[in-house]
Image (cartoon, rainbow, N blue to C red):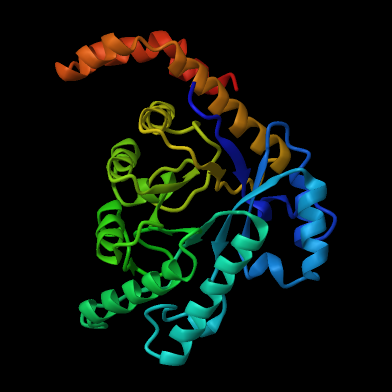
Length: 324
């Protein structure tokens, strides 16, 4: 049997229903979601508003296992880049913040740090020296990953937003960076919305990273591909999302499934519970899939046969998506 995945979600989604905007209140709200069993915090965002002991106590009381820390570089200091800032002092501070996140991950037993380099990129032709930016980015990645080989570090790619062009904007870019960094504990986090924004087929992107044994994190969400929509799982591209889960199971992914969704108009507890229920039903559907028949249909590249097999297993994906 495959190892069960842990489910975590975006803590900031719970601000409208939490006892205050800080991490302890967010954790108490998140802990009410049926099936949620992990937590991933933002650094330094969730670590600066209360004493460290209070945060650790809140995590323990929540019953959620820490499985990761997500870097957030905020404020004007990093508006023109973190690891790629034109100012050496800013680059050094950005790396120092990431090293602190690695130390916090080790202290919490989380084991994983996700680097989303939001402002590392450019907006105009001729604005930057692309090779120099790439070298600075990889230097930062390497220094962070070297800091503690026991902690996995991954880059979360995104093609645009907030910069018009991110430096690490595709799975290909991310895997090239991973190969050039060349450290066993440095890999990739796949965000489904970001993959759609990049014009990728998320299942194929997952397969590439799994082939390299470098898929360290998965952010599950939905969108239409034009922006970072963060919609509920499986509601726009149910078959595509089902295939992502199929690739993860097939490729032996053992990390956390993190629901990076933005329930602005939905109740965050209900939305997160629906995400978990959708994934659980999807996994049950995959358990009914005729593996041998699917392999034969894929070998023949018979899209109609594949569609029939997936439809039989899921009970009809449209009804499947609507009934969660």
